[in-house]
Amino acid sequence: MIPIQFLAMLTMLIDHIGVVWHPNDTAWRIIGRLALPFYIYAMVIGYSRTRDVTRYLTRVGLLAVISQLPYQFAFPTYGLAINVIATLFFCLLTLLLLDWLKGKAIASFLVIAAVMVLLEALPFDYGGYALLLMLIYRYATPHMMVLLHLALNVFSIFYKSWTLQLFSLLSTLWIVYMPALMGSMDRIRMPRFLWRSFYPLHLLIIAIVYYVMNP
Image (tube, rainbow, N blue to C red; front, side, top):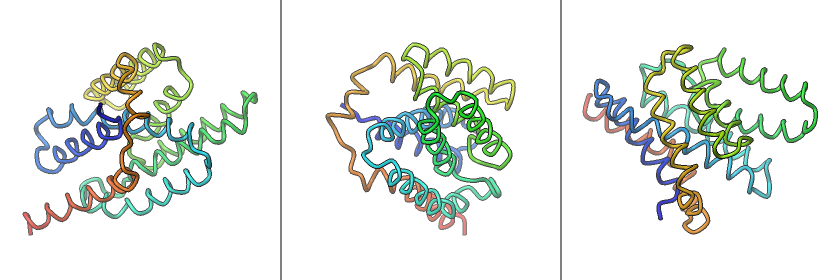
């Protein structure tokens, strides 16, 4: 059985290869739309199962810092954009704050609104979209995940013209209607070093290969 971490890494790699070497071929990007939901879902599961939330967030924060330079080298046309691991760090921090504020609806709403503004005001990769999707995976029932993710994607078409993002719904359909995939997380463990290092490492390799091929 294929663990969800592997699917996340594979679809992300395909997406980034498409960005760098096949920017006009949408097939690479369509496959790549599956990566973010898989990553977010895996992180929600990791957050809910970790014994030490502070250490979990610290690792993600450090990974975000480490990933920024490889991200900029791999995608120089993105300018000063902030990598997606940093985005996910603030998404996870939101979950932690919501857990602390359990039962305090107004305070919880203000936290979500503040983080949404931060992610949209600064050039975070995926911005508030990632936060809303993480909240869907964290709090919605399985069937509602599908409906809410679809609504989020439709909204993103009008708000950011993200038409290809519709294909990301395939990940949620896979998660919800193929429970064996979710169960695989318990039966097959992705090596921690590979899972934690893949994002900055694959970006660094892409950057090196690109600059060697295009001196």
